[in-house]
Length: 326
Ligand SMILES: NC(=O)c1ccc[n+]([C@@H]2O[C@H](COP(=O)([O-])OP(=O)(O)OC[C@H]3O[C@@H](n4cnc5c(N)ncnc54)[C@H](O)[C@@H]3O)[C@@H](O)[C@H]2O)c1
Image (tube, rainbow, N blue to C red; front, side, top):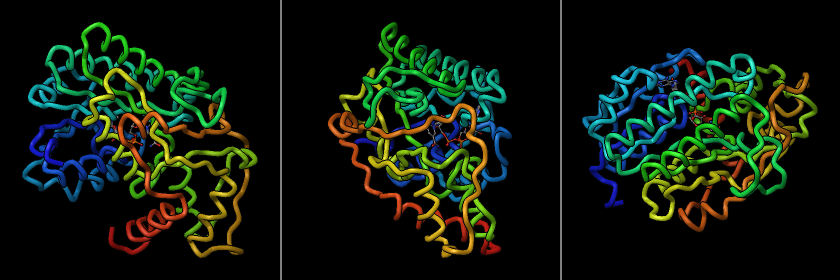
């Protein structure tokens, strides 16, 4: 990819799950990568250090431990970059139900800080992480980008607000920006609060994985490499400016089916069975992305199916947490 080699990029939240994969991929493509991350305590900051362990010594990598909510820190890293990937956020639907103020503060005010700097600094491109949560219980499926935004959690609201601010700054100042609605991303380094990570951790220890509700809720799962592919294409595509795109895996599977696959992949069929608890507040019933727009305009094409993706995630989990070698 000749075009992006030697570009200078900033990833906010680049020590997190998706951000650290993005950083690795961009370094492989010869970009100069800067990360700003405050290592917040939403989950163990040690995990985030590990996420960037392999790339920290790269001569093309630089890092600031700081918050996007601190204008000086943010300005110092945004000043000399061509492209900004804004991924820093308080993720998690349930966390947002518990502490809606914190979610709004990081996700909405944080985005506003990024937009204000982008306006002043004339960045070449800004790619912003949104979420399938903006649709809530979507009016139809597969859900395209024209579907009404109808969030049912404070997290979803924070991402709708993120998008509206982005559109507004695009119209006001013509900032070349693109928003990405990720659909449940999974794979190595997935956040420990997410379903697949929690389930693999339980199943491999012969403990019952927990399913919220009856398990008939379904998700479109996106393997992290595909999410990274879509994220980079949002930067390089000429047709992405001022638009939001679904970044999904292109499939749909119920949580019950997923757990069966996962138990099979862990070699625990007949040994462990899921346990059902109460449905979680704020969780949507189904997600399924129509990714035609991303296919057409970004040339996005997810390549990893759920069975294959689970296999790799289970292998990663074993190597990371069960081999003794962390
Ligand atoms: N993982 C998914 O399935 C998914 C789905 C939809 C949307 N998203 C969005 O994608 C982005 C990345 O998600 P993720 O799963 O990698 O989450 P993550 O929590 O692993 O990564 C987010 C990173 O942001 C950092 N951060 C939080 N507050 C910050 C602040 N004030 N200043 C600087 N850094 C800060 C955290 O320390 C963390 O490392 C988020 O915007 C999230 O809302 C993720």
